[in-house]
Image 1 (tube, protein in one colour):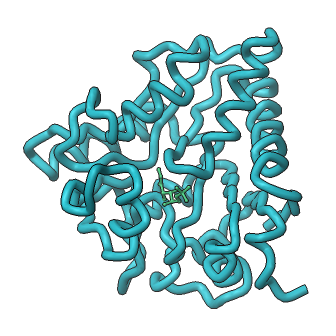
Image 2 (tube, rainbow, N blue to C red; image 1 turned 135 degrees about the vertical axis):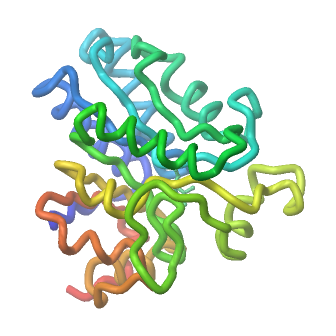
Length: 243
Ligand code: F6R
């Protein structure tokens, strides 16, 4: 695991965007695994700036997002599809037909999961997976549990995640209780993984991810077993790491 220390959120975002920039430059038809949430917004903004300056071309990129709330339509402002459209896809020259997000409206849960796994394998797997880190150590919506889940699955969200995400909804009652998420196996099969972590509220989770034991109670801890993980974390997030 390579750990890159960033000064603050902005510095983290720039450093992470530069890694994605390098990936796209080296392999213009990369399959990017993407995340939503607060962590990647700055990274996406930086990538948009590179695109606007003419330095980055998304025309041959495929993207496969980590997760989606169950029951939310793509045009629901809280859906992850809407988030990606707004924060990245509509601002760069990516082919919209090559952007994948789990289908939150598929009534057949098992079919939704199966279809998504088929998309991942049909696209040949993920070249670079971008991850944020949950305060409880989750990645995607792989919440702390008794086992590492393999493929795409539908999960009940934990109280801590509902609490963390309610800021995006009118009230806590509006936060969906289930989400589709790529499984740990799909994430671990990505050729490269880039984790971005910012803020003191992530310090404990980051310490456990990097220096704790490997346990499904901290899903991100499994990343210690991946051969090509880069973590870009700011000083606040790194404040609990042992030297
Ligand atoms: C989002 C996702 C989540 C977030 C995590 C951190 O697609 O998969 O695992 O990365 O909850 O969220 P933020 O970045 O909002 O702190």
